[in-house]
Length: 347
Image (cartoon, rainbow, N blue to C red; front, side):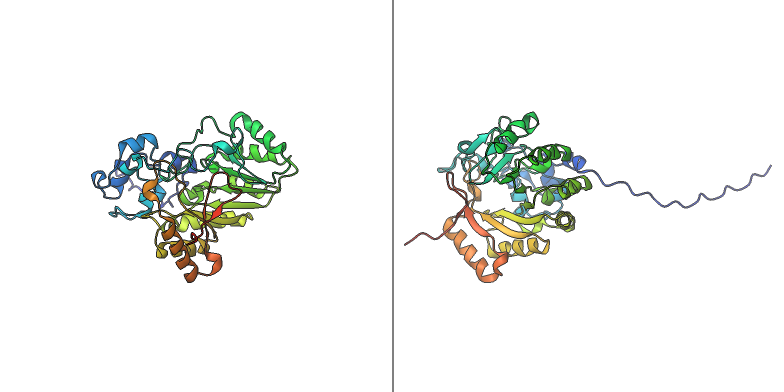
């Protein structure tokens, strides 16, 4: 018997796989310096990578952020922000474990109040990326976490002080919390009549833009207060099309976007880099806000730019850019009533 030839299988359109959820991308972050450097074609021995610094403050960097680093460049400004190196373990005079006076400004568990009218909630100790210059790298997150106990103590402290009209969500990174957990907090805050504004400080729209998902946007759109959203980028190379899209989505729910950066030696301490950062952030719909002088916490002295050079760079930036593109050059000083503008010393 002759069998009929098999008919060719019909052509099928491939079904695209769903994009990974942000939590999965978070779990895939690189934590091993050797793997990070191998992805960039670099050798650990050439860069002074430190096991002791890694043990003190772990490496964590999302793969999407790594993809923006320049392969084969040991001086890449994004790599320098995350790589643990020997210099972190050198004790430096004038550098302390609590450089900005968080401990003295504690109002309640996880609630810090340094300035009139504003209360900062340390919502979590988690971040999607561990920046080596972090001023809270020695902070007691286990003991000072506003989310403990369903936010009750933190909310009660704010409710008891009618002078507080703005709440700032910080951390760690507040967007490292699941959106329902954040909604639990804002639902409780909504019952406090003297709150007039909410501010969120987060690096996630830059380092893990997938965090800006539909659930997050729905929560933000339903908030009863005007929203200021302060991102954190230090170099123009931190922006890409994914970051631009995440920021556009945040603007779409009415958030006012601002950027605060840190002046860092070897990262952005030249006028070309600073100008590019301002111009690139504004192109993404983000207004330059603060350029911080380094907070002098132990382990970060190798990033410090002296005040004279900082002022010279800022003056060059003002001469080069429109005023609205020039961030305020400031320092945080423990006990001050606000950020202190950096000014030349009187001769």
